Image 1 (cartoon, rainbow, N blue to C red):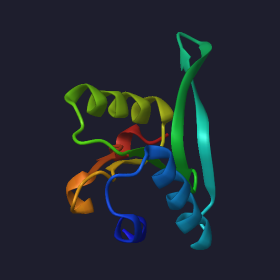
Image 2: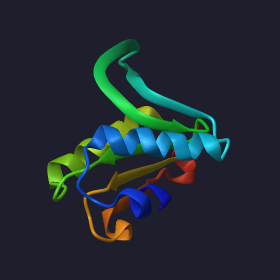
Image 3: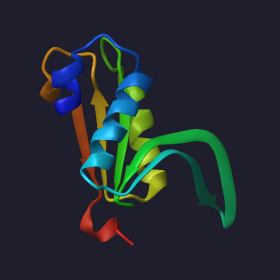
Length: 115
């Protein structure tokens, strides 16, 4: 919220990601940026060009966007990244909105899916 309050909408995705990383580090969260996505498929390790924007405390996937609107395809891509990441919670945050609450989409892994 602090990032959106300070900057407002209209900047690039990477600017919001950088500022969000600064905020989270100041709050002493363990943070990884631009984590390569790798997963197992039929017993084989698959490395991809896809990146996880921010992984917070090893449990939260935070994907950052800065666009007018998110398409269904982009939301489905986020869900796929989240599923393959095996993290517990995911937030897709679009900073290019007047009210940040309207730009946040949350997804959580069901308890039985957590390994």
